[in-house]
Image (cartoon, rainbow, N blue to C red; front, side, top):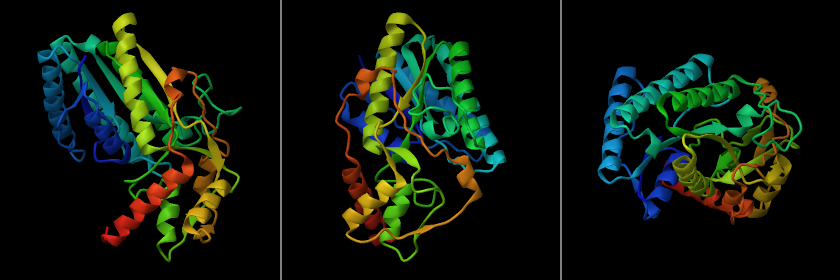
Length: 322
C-alpha cells in the first residue's frame, strides 16, 4: 500500500531527516510542498488548504493512504507566552484545514497525523522516572503546558474529523542540521564551542540526566510509528496514540562532556552559570516507552558516533562561512 506524506516543517532538523527517510522508502511518496507562510494567518490557511487538497487528491487517485507530519515550530523553554500562543493558534488553523479537506474527500479513515511533542516539556515535573506513556505529565514551564495543549488540540481534531493521530513525545533531539541560533540542542552548542573562542554556557547541574536521540534514528522511528498507526486504524478504526520517542539511554551532562573531551582530544569549552530558566528544566528526564515496544528494538546510533557526526557538521558549517 502506497502512503502519501506531507511534512510540515521540512526545512527543520527533524523535518529534513524525516523527509529524507520517506524519500528512501519505496512504498511512501513525499509530497512536494512549499514552506507555509507563518507570518500571515490568512495566507497560511490558503496555502495549507491548497497543499492538503493536493495530498488528498493524490492519495485518492492512487487509492493510497495519506499522512501529515507536523514537525514545525520555533518554541523553546524561553519563548515568550505570546509567541507560544501564536504557534498553538496556527497549529489549530492548519488542523481545521485538514479536517475540512478530509471531510470533503471522505478519506479520513485512510489518513493519519503526527504531532512532534516534547518529552522534556511534558514530563519536566513528573515523579518517578523513567517516564513512560502511563506517567502523569507535569509540565513546569509555559513551553511544556503548550505541548500538552497542542496534544489536546490534536486529539480534538481526531474526534471531529475521524483521522487517526499520534502525539510523539520526543526526547532530546540532536544531530547534523541543528540550527545553532535556536536556543536548544546542547550537543550542537558544545560542538560549536569546540571550534570557537566563545564557550558554551551550561545553566543546569552537571548531574542533570537527559535522553538523547540521534535525528536520523528519530526520523526512522517516526515513519515506522505512522505506518503502524495506519495499520492499526485500518483494522480497529480511528486511533489516538501517545508514544515516547527516545533512545532509552539517558546520560548526565557530565557524561556528555566526557564524550566531547574524548572526541575533541581537549577539554570542553564550557562555562557553568546560573539562569532562571534552569528552574523550568527537570533534573532527571529518563524516558522509556511501553507503546508498540517492538518498534523500539532496533540498532540506534551510539552517542559517541552521533556526537562525532554533529561535530563534523558544525565544523563544516563554520568553514563554509555559515
